[in-house]
Each structure stands twice: as structure tokens, then as C-alpha cells.
Image 1 (cartoon, each protein chain N blue to C red):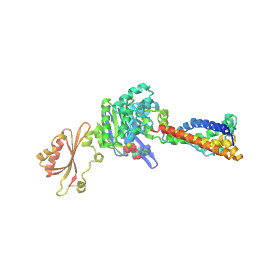
Image 2 (image 1 turned 90 degrees about the vertical axis):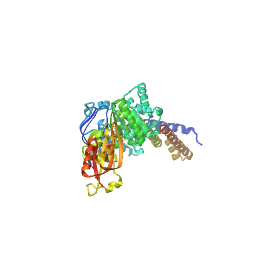
Image 3 (image 1 turned 30 degrees about the vertical axis):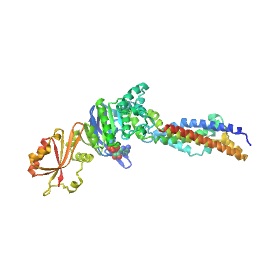
Image 4 (image 1 turned 120 degrees about the vertical axis):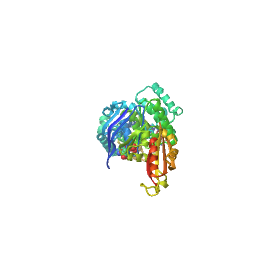
Length: 214
Length: 343
Ligand SMILES: Nc1ncnc2c1ncn2[C@@H]1O[C@H](COP(=O)(O)OP(=O)(O)O)[C@@H](O)[C@H]1O
Ligand SMILES: [Mg+2]
């Protein structure tokens, strides 16, 4: 039998990694999505060059598999946090992976806001910033929350991969016990905990969305 | 109040350039309800959107209270837009906000305090009959109620001008009437200048003081309501007004009708009369004075904003001299006669 305490530390590590990388993803991903959206052709801040550049960057980053991104980012991570090993260090590649993902999701969520509404705001004399803050984001809020939920769930999955390069967390536990020691029980319980984490995140997201949808 | 001078606008599409506005000139006076009517694709939306520069014309001048707004900075343009309310066919309300917050939006944009906002929104709720619905969300409202919210919102910053882009086209007849009534009310109460575009002749008839007919980006006709219906200046305008008014002859007559006189045929007249002549017993006089035999097959009296318009389709039997006498008499009574054909 194993100690239940075996799971406590890795669980916290996972939550720590996912929480902070999600925070960073929102901090940068949402503005990125907004910029991607408003610089589209014929849009409120239409700018072809910026739009194309951003788009290229985003799709470039998104096409790199996470495991490779993680390794490729090692010098960058070391520069930022001083080390490339450990839970804090793992936050860097996780965030770098999540930011363009959320950005793309936000762009597509914003495009669901009716263009008539944006025009109505323009006709009222709203500035670009006001349109973003008072119209676009509030109108898209349910979709934005769904996007963030999706990002967090992805980050839970990727955080497990981060365990392979010394990131710690549940992924690391599963590899060490399940893969290297053939401890099926630890493996199974890790899976259960991961499922519960994902379900809980989804539940929270759905709850918020339900409250907002009226 | 609003003036467009030599306004041109082209859309560039893959299929080529679309001239949406071609040398548009018009002037809307303070306190007036001005209508622009035309078929779908005529350029109506482009025209009205040029007034607050949601669409920038390629050429020409757009003057609001005498100032050309095309030369303004983005910031100054926002200022001008606070003075121009706009409502739309599909209402364009914030679905995430309830009625009160929707109406408050223009005031929030102007950074008014909560208290000031309340002081302005409450009377608007009353004016538009939405006090009960203050905390309802758009999806809980009917089309007419949504348009009322949009009107209240458009009025929140006390604009001098209201633009209506097909404001009643998504509404049923009854609701249309009530929205038009509301627009007429606020036009009078606040001396609000209203520019409205529509493809429905009924709307124009009910509320407009003057009207412009738009076709393929050009103004074909611009006149007062009574003139518009009784004596359009060009043949093309006349045809279009008829199409837009759905004023067709009965099927049977249309089939048998010939353009030219033929042996034994009688003419079909369409008689338009306005104002006083609409009330006088014109037909009786025609029969008695000119000894014509008249068969009325459709007649219609329509109420314009400040006038009545009678339209009567008749066949007239009589010799040419009598017929001429009849036409002269009608003209002397301020009516207009149009020969639609012969049967
Ligand atoms: N954004 C646009 N891009 C290209 N063509 C357009 C655009 N908007 C309108 N048009 C074209 O311009 C013409 C006038 O359109 P519009 O002003 O919307 O007419 P209306 O409101 O009278 O139906 C139409 O032929 C329409 O297809
Ligand atoms: Mg239109």
C-alpha cells in the first residue's frame, strides 16, 4: 500500500503550475485576442501588418508540439526564473504555449459579437477603448469564460508533460511510480485525481457561464 | 441641420466597383422628419451611415449644423456623434445588459455619474413605456419593446438628430404603427430632427414631412409628401413610387389592358387628389358636368402626415371631347390624372 500523503505534494505542484500559467495566459492571451480581432481588415482598428505579424507568430507557436517547445525554451526559462528545472520553471513554457492558444480562442469568441452592436457603439461616439471595454468584452464574457476553462484544462494536461523535465506535479508522480516502478495503484489514482481536476474546472466554468447567460 | 453635398461612395469588391452613392445632395431642416425611400440595394443604408460617418464617403461634404465633419479628428467626431442618435433594423442592444443599462450606455461613455445617469434614464423609460421592463434583458422583450429600448438609448445623450435605418422593417404592422407614433411624438416634443430610411411606403406616408427617392445610388426625386405622390417629376420616379406603393391594377384588367387606344376601348384613369379635393365629391361632378360614364374599380384614401391622398382607378366612357373636359375639370380641382391604358 502507499501513503495518501504521497499525492499531496504533487497535487499542489500541479495546481501551482496550472494556476500561475493560467493567470499569465489570461493576462497576455486576452489582450492578444483583442488585438488580433480589432486589427482584422475593416475592423475598428484595422491594421493589416500588425494583424498578419501577430497571426504568424500565434500560428507559428501553436504548431510547435509542447514537448519540443519546452526544451527549446530552456534558455529563455533560465533567463526568466534563473533555472530551467522545477515547478516554477515549468510555468514559463506552459504560459508560452497557452497564450497564443487563448489568444486565438478569444479572437474567435469576439468575432461572434454582432457587428451591428459595434456599429451602434460607434454611432454613440464610443472610442476604440470604450468599445472594447464596454461592449466587446462584456458581450463576449460567457464565451471568454468557456475559452479560459478550455485553456485551464489544456494546461492541466500539459502540466503533466512538464513533469518529464523535472517540473514535478502529478505527471512526474505518474512517471516515477507508474512507469518506472510499475506501481499500478499510484498510476490509477493519479489518473482519477487528474480526471477530478478537469471535471471540477469544467464544472466551475459551466457554472459561471450559466449565471451569465440570460 | 444635416446637409450632404455632392457625396459619392463606391464599394470595391472582387466583382468590381459598386457605386453606392452618386452625387447625393440633400438638406434636412431642423425639426423635420425626412424620409429616404428606395428598393433594397439602392444605397439607403450607405446614405444614412454617411451622416455619422459609419461609412466615409469618397467625395463630397457632410455638414452637421453647418460644419463639415469629414475634416474632424477622431476625437472631435466622437463629440459630434454624441449629438446624433441612431436606431437600427435589428435593434443592436447589448444582450448582456438589462434595459436600464442599455439605455444608460451612451451616458456611461460620456462618463456621467450614476446619479446623473439615473436622472436621465428614468424619464426615458417613462417616455418609451418601459418602466415595468427596466430590469428585463433584451431576449425577454418583443421586437417592438426592443426598438423602444433602442430609441430611449438613442435619446439618452439628448441628441439633436436621430437617424433611423429601417427602424420598423423587422416589426409587424401594429408594432410599426406604435413605433412610428413614438417617433412622431419625440419629433414634436424635443424638436428632434429625424432622418429615416425605409423601403416601406407606409412608413414614409405616416410620418415624413419630405421625402427623397433613391435608386441605384442616385436621388430621383426630392419633394414634399403631397407632391411626391401626386406629381413626381420624372417617369422613372413615378414608376418606382408605384412599385414601392404596391399600387397595381387588378389582375384581370392588367391582362386585357393595351397601351394604345383601339376601336371601342375605354381609357383607365388613375386619379390622384390631395387636400381639399380629396373631400369634395369629385366623381359626382365628373358624371354630372362632363356626362361621363364612370366605373370605379378601386379607390383608396391614404392619410399622409399632414395631408390626405386619394387614389382612384376608374374606367371612363365618353367621347374624346367629354374626356378632355373631364381631365380639365380634374386639373382645375387640383387633382392629377394618369392614363394607365385602354380596355
Ligand atoms: N460593405 C460593403 N461592401 C461591398 N458592397 C457593399 C457594402 N455595403 C453595401 N454594399 C453594396 O452597395 C449597394 C448599396 O447598399 P446599401 O446602402 O446597403 O443599400 P440599401 O440599404 O438601400 O439596401 C448594394 O449594391 C450593396 O450590395
Ligand atoms: Mg439597408
